[in-house]
Image (cartoon, rainbow, N blue to C red; front, side, top):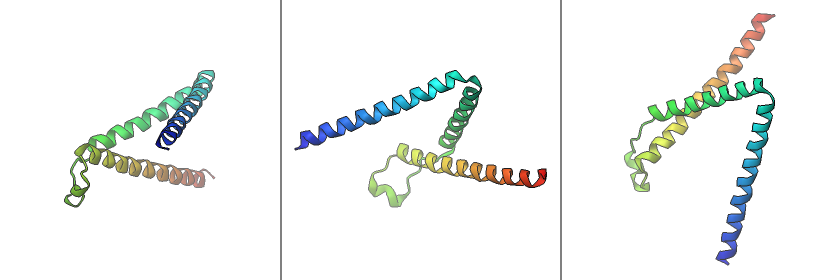
Length: 109
């Protein structure tokens, strides 16, 4: 019975991986066809990578005493901190973009 479950899990990984590669391939194909969109895509991807790197650099690797019983490593704590900080930065950026858009619409009329 375990071998059937393992085969199912392997097939699932293969299907998800191939679907991801196909989706990325179509995106790259569209990006190559239109160079103006390619620049925007590269800028957006670069901005996301910059936010993630910034978040990783300022994240703390300190483990709280209450979480030591879960055997969390310093690396795991740093990655979790990076995720939380990047979420906050991106959420504040999204809220700021919406507020800026609404305020600029009000003053342009």
